[in-house]
Length: 314
Image (cartoon, rainbow, N blue to C red):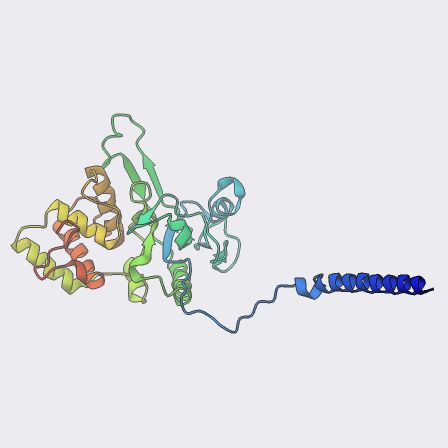
């Protein structure tokens, strides 16, 4: 009898232990509500930045219909964040112009290609691209004897930009700038600024000065340019190495090892942007004076008291 009681008690203890283990296992199992990730946003860090540093302006060289197709179909592998049509385009069937967003600003559009500004490369990663429908056209001479004559081996036709198109562009740019404070005036650039050896857009007809007058982008002060014109006409022009250093300080990819051909492309791109009336790629006194005026305005620390550019080797 006594042994039966002991056996019964042991069985009861083992059963209770088993039930306890099962309950413990059940308690440890995640419930459905535990699987839902709850993000608590009570605390926000002040140490962050957006991916966007640049705005890059392009022209499409195509009409509206072809521009839209190229920028949206996967087979072409190019895109932009925004596309703005122009009036009097027979392929644009809407009665009013509009701003078309093709890629969300938080995403990376494929518009810049191989590019550089200052020390930053892969500008696609850091920019918002805006395409303007404008049927500019540049053709290259295929004559083998002309290929080495990089100053003469191409011809371009640049139509004027539609004023209504620019009227849409300006508020768009202002909105982008209000959302991305990291974009400095000198970081609003053309495709040819960041890829001068292979791109022409938006070309010399794009109204950079008008944008500046509306609070967007960089431009020089005429009085400062005139000061440097007088200085350079009175005294010797800066050396080629100093001029290359000046371009580099402003943002263009050029240095002491750059070839004459590479220098030509940079000078042409700079003239497209800041001296469009004469954009032959030749380095003249006015071009240099404009460059120095821009440095004084936006990068004053790179000029010494004698108005010479401070270069890395100095």
